Length: 80
Image (cartoon, rainbow, N blue to C red; front, side, top):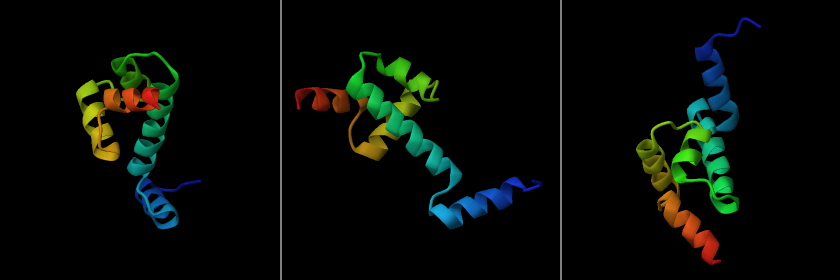
């Protein structure tokens, strides 16, 4: 198709309103939420399975997006 990465990035941003990185991050976080709610995997395993080999980075991004840590999120969902 001969499309350059800068062109694709601009096209994605124009059509979706989000950058490619933001879209990937949102997909990863959605999957992480599903795993936290429905599974018994450790946070470290979940972080790695959604593409964050560094659990501290995953925790930081998760808290930035949801206002709580993954453990707090899991505990809140289990209490409901």
